[in-house]
Image 1 (cartoon, rainbow, N blue to C red):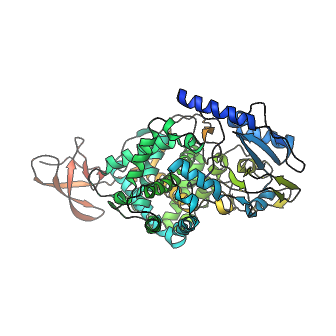
Image 2: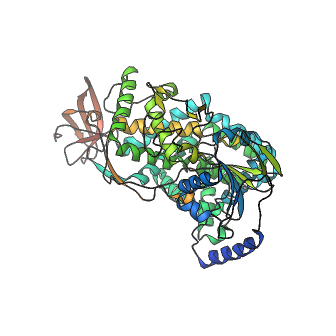
Image 3: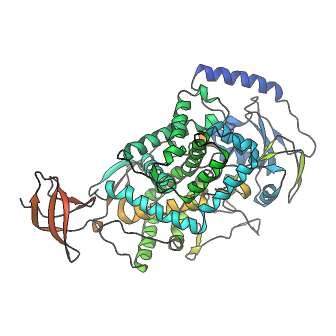
Length: 564
């Protein structure tokens, strides 16, 4: 699975904030060496060359400050093809969507070369560089992320959502307030880990998941430093954090989990052929898979919630669409967590899908990269373009996603932008011609994210649960900006956070009358209570709360004060 949304990427090429004198010194020496070598001039047939006034970094500072605005300015000045110096690398940007196919199909433009470098730098996966058979076998596991295998993952995801929400949230009868980003991060991480790697059987499950999530967040926070080539030894305690994460995902550790997904089982079978059982690089592979599964799904979920909370009309339309589907499938509102939707039913929620696609259009800032393996001439629709060996070619989808000729008022959030007459809209035009590619948050060609179907399913299921079971309100109704520190690396996180509040809807709280209390077992902690619920007499073991309510089956039900 490649980064959940948009695939793996090479180094960010943008200046990173350095956290110690050692980093500053290393960066200074590197800068000196590369400044001496950055004396390139444009050759005949090559795109316009834009180096900027700052050696090595070139135009990186301007690009990081306002990527879309800066690229749009360059497009107006130089056209749809130009080469930028960024962090010592020469990168040719292709901005015309009618040229994308020529890039994707050219065999001399490689995606795998820098992917292997990325895996080594970030996760300490080394064997992929030298063993193409391992690469091919790992790629074969992507089939377990689609088709009938996706249906199995869907069922697992919904069961894991139930485990996440029932104990913690379905007893929330009053408003609970949280920051939106940690909320999304916690739910997505726990749900995704359980879906892919299974459930922790030990009593300390909550402790294990919390520590794993915290360590993962520390690792992910320094991810761009690693990807840019900064030695891990210069990044504080990051090496020990990564080592602990890898240890938590070794063969021995995974054996303690129940319910490994098919994709993980198959990857384990493959890795056992290429590694000794105790080789820690197996855990490094699984860390890469976990990172790819979570890193872009979290911010996508955040932005989806953020825009829906700020647009009550959109939320109302989605609620109505979901309610109509539940009614049409005979699923009535009532106590308990009982939603079940097939993939076809989930896909029929066109406004829900349009909302997610619109969020990705607005917020995705990934690039689609290729490495130039030899000098070549790229034959495009409007012109030929000479490229040098060792350079990079990048398709930059945000230019496409914010093109006013393709999307009216592209800066606005329009939840129904990808619908037409109540159906999915898939036809968009530029210069009067139908576009083959109009929405590219998941990459293109060989670099297209194999986990995109699961990522979409997870976000849809989570939104369905939240919109069905909970009242949701934003508290800090303030505009947020994208944090471009991960520019070219998928979905940016927000530059700050907002508070929101949630509580379970009233019709999901069962009205239960306790007709007779059973034997008291020494305290109010455990009582046998006989009552009628939905026309049937039931006996449950419950806990009496100070409020006179009864907590049973992990759900809080309103009831009469229990008799002694």
